[in-house]
Length: 158
Length: 349
Image (cartoon, chains in turn purple, blue):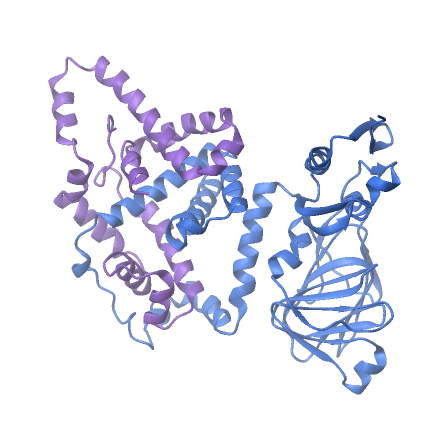
């Protein structure tokens, strides 16, 4: 799973729709039976390939522009991009738009590493509530998070 | 549906998939779930895009470091204040969850995913059935959903016939043939009674399936509790069998009642999501079942082939997959397409 997370980072949020178009077409070209074995792995690998190809194309085109090169260098590490103060503040802001229980659930999951079942016990709510809140909060964050500030994902990554 | 709705829906489905595949039990994702997920991805670029975005949300949270600054309010305390904070959105659902409604809810959601992936067209129709003894009927290859005047939703499978007789004190439905899933609107003052043959099923507010066929009458409860009586006399005497969620009972035509079984309702009621499940059933039975759901009729012209046993889960409207399955199960199978339908036979040696 780790590896897929790494390859996911080749895509910038702003480009998701474009990348998705191309990935979608590739998914249709592949044999479904093959994809079914590891659908997520295939998806992320394709997304990362698409992004890498585009990155090569665009960096060739813009190679002479020092400004572009500098910005590429600055984004060299995806971790670094998300570690930036602005990105962290943006995530914090987005989290604060969630309900207290949704925040508590995410905090227990990501900070304390509890499973959803353990969170349910801890908060004294049903497992289904935890699961639903989880899904809901991801949906809210997807709308709330500012892509530009959290651009964890970049071109040209392995 | 406009673009925003489609996007919102794709986001919602993407969060569900992400949760199932990546958060809950990444090592225990079943083949069929992976198949459904792959199908879902291949349905639309929007699905691909939203899944990538949800993955990005997850990444962002994984790399987030300021959890100390995240206020959780009173949410961690047992009697939390959450419900007061956003009561509009949450309270009704939670109220239901606490008394057992969640099982059905998640199942409904699973069904929704399955239905959208498999493109099963279930026609939804609103019926205002005011008169007594109204007949609701579905034809060959027709599935429909009907809302009764009390808000109860009935899902009719093909070749099913119901007679609805609502009285002041009692909501009565006779299942004359076929099978149907009932999501009964709650009304404690006015019980809901489904009868099939001599068997009756009494419910207050619940969801359950009733099948009337060659095996007898099969009652499966998804949510809540029902009382089953195998004869009008038993009902009058109060000699009822109580079933709760996840239980099933079969009343044979002769009137004898099989023991109550605990079943996986998703599987036992697979027909309600347009799937047919077979376990060691003869090919003849399988084909009969398929023919109820499809206009193109299948037939077998080989008596020995007809007794061959089949196990598997099939989309009810996808007879091609069934045919491929049969073909693969033996080299001697021939499939002939005629104007009248598809004939399955054996190849002459």
